[in-house]
Image (tube, rainbow, N blue to C red):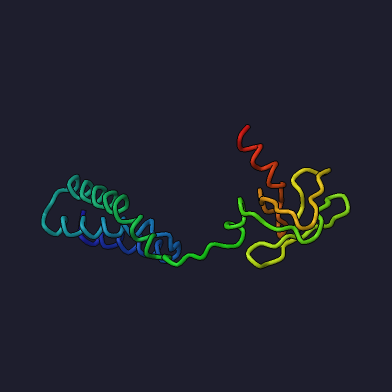
Length: 151
């Protein structure tokens, strides 16, 4: 192969990376660059392909996790990810049939529903968040959540 073919492959992978921004093809662009150097040094076609694949896979395997870690180090978790398994205080009786219920979590008031339809959770009690559906917390009383863990 010629140096220009490897140059074209490298540019192609860089263009793909620019459009996808997923840090997936940049490693293959680096592999093509090293294969281009191997070609310029007179290595045979089989050796060039071997260098391309080995360099690409090694870079992908060892450096991609590190690069992803530093790409977005300050990822902020959303309220949704933090709410499950938290304890909340019920500020309005939770009654699914009447469509009532609110609870306070981390100083914010949320709409709340009981996990089981007939269950009523009185105001002032504590409950555990078992899920979030839209903007509603799905709750179970603290006693019920410990019993289901032990079973």
